[in-house]
Length: 134
Image 1 (cartoon, one colour):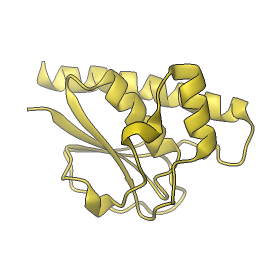
Image 2: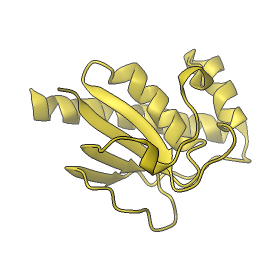
Image 3: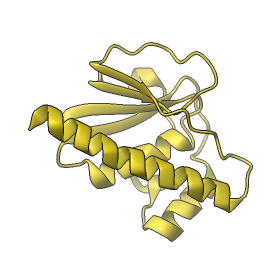
């Protein structure tokens, strides 16, 4: 059975969506990945969508959309992106906070920097999960 991972952010429109996309790319064989928020936006951040397509070949809008936490299943690992607010408790085996700055409204280079950090953290998560199940 796959480990369930949820990437949580306030609006579920940028960092958590990027993390879900990398999760689906790098963790699909061992994890079911979701993203959600305490609020939703009508669409995923369009700068994130554009840059993920350009630099990683990932179309986040193909299968992803902004959703509330109650719309995802119970998870084993809960990862908040660094909400700068009190993130709600989600019962899971592991609760992590990646403490990432929201790049919304900033230059492309800031988005790419955040994307690189998220990609690295998802790859580290892969090793962590493999260690637990292997």
